[in-house]
Image (cartoon, rainbow, N blue to C red; front, side, top):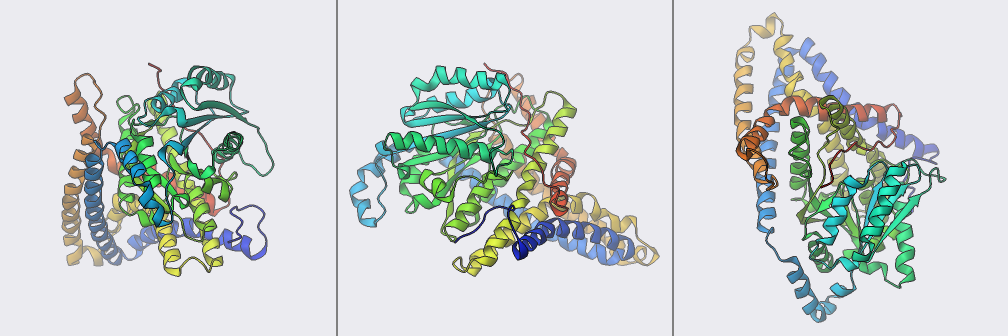
Length: 519
């Protein structure tokens, strides 16, 4: 489908539709919150009934998500000891038989990996552990091309660190390139996707010069602080080889935030562990899975769709939607039963970390900018089945609205009917029974809460720390911060992002400040 995947350059009906869908997400969130607030004041009885119905729905969905989380954790644990290179060699042995399927994979010896690290303000101590993790792979590191994509406007310290890593590691990889992305190229915004796109096109020249087919290359775009487990590229290679439509797929690992988990503030830990759990739950439904943060995909597909958007902040999810629309819905995300680790937000001081967490979550929530792009394409497309379009659109819409509203409804607005109750409501049976009903619902939710705490402890890295038992107990108790943290450091920044989008106040890309000591 010929489709302009951008908010820029639109005219007439397309421009009006785009603005309508930009307003719809934030408008719905504000309507729900303000509507319940006013209803609590004017009609507390009706508001109380609606709140109880919502609490019951939330409880059922919480139990459902907890079951999926347990299953995802079990699968991750089960696959932890898998020898993925042995499986790769097994697929090589079956290559002859797979040729009959019409989609034979290339030999594992013909597969190359391209790893992009877009850098803006990340110095060597942030990036170096990730490069070292590439050298520790069970997959041959001499078939991994690494590109440090440095912004031209980056500081000299960032550029110097990139050059030092190039000299130190390039002979131990296929190669390590340092690419400088010029500032202010036509049609580009100051976003990570523009940097990654420029680097990918430079890497394409590298492979073309060595006559490496793009269909034999898997590209991974990693955040600067990403550290992969030793099995990551062998697991990725295996799933790429056994996927019948490997050139129409992205591959999504489970992101965990373990690099500095013992040093980060508790509220920051709780939020990022929650993000990991959300991705684990999402991985149980691959039909509607969307790429998030660090991910991998066919380099052939990346080049065919024109790489990442160069004028959007949410490039990690936008590349999925761009490919999905380009291939008329014939595109999927394959979940990988393997983790990669990144940093928990830690800006050095408690208050600076609060500010950084808020701004990071607001940037993530800016993924709502995908909604108008996707809806315009879905209205225009007649090749993507209607059921598929409706399923994806409703999920995308629901995810953003629930992100901005649920915590407020549960932790704040849900108690307003009793506060604003008038004489008629205060003398009703519901006035006396609603607190008991709500209390019972929240008591039942503690089953899911304790399950979540136990799972969070089981996924912690096995790093030696002083008084490990007390440390883990402290991590468990930090989950008591959930109502406050998810309301003011997750739902509020999401509502902030949607409000900005609703009024056309488009954000600029902001890189999370990261601090880490190089061992």
